[in-house]
Length: 201
Image: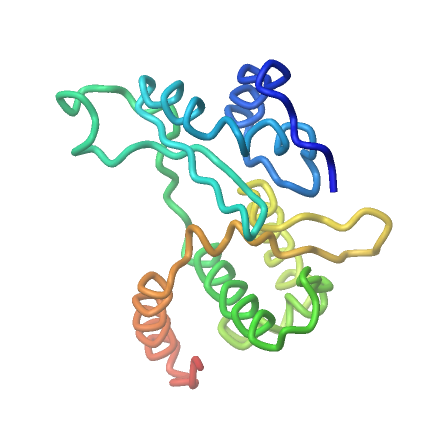
C-alpha cells in the first residue's frame, strides 16, 4: 500500500486535467488516483463552476466527470461541456448484454476482471441479430460496434492477447438495473419484429 500524500503534495491541476481527458482508473492512472481520493471535495468545487460533477467509485476504482442535470444548471443556460451521445440500437444491445454478463460474473465471485474474447462477444450478440448468410460481414459489423464501445470506455483491448477485451466496471455507472429492465422490454419488441420471438433472458 502506498504512503498517503501530505496536503502540500496534493496536485489539483493533475487530477482535473486527467478527469477532463476521460475516465481515471485506479489501476491504470495510479498517480492521478492517489491525488484524487483526498481532493474529492476540491475537485467537486472546481468542476462545479463548469456545470460538471465528479463521480468517484472507490470500490470499483474509477472516477469520471458528468454534466449536472439540467435543472441544477444556473438558469438552465450553461452550455454542456460533455455532450449527450445517442447510441445506435446495436451499441445499446451490446452494452446491455455486457452489463448482464458483468452482473453474472460478479455473482460468481471468481475474479475481479471480466475478460471476453472476440469470439465470445460475437456469440453473445449473434442470437439477437437477424440471420445472415454472410458470416464475415456479420463479424465485421460486430467488430465495428466493439470498437465504438471501446472508444466510449466500456471495453479495453487487452494488450498482448489476440482479440480479447476487458469489460470496464464503469459500465455499471451508466447501465443500472432500471435501464436494463427498460432495455429488456425494447429487446423483446425487437425480437418480435424479427419474427423470432426468442427468449431474451
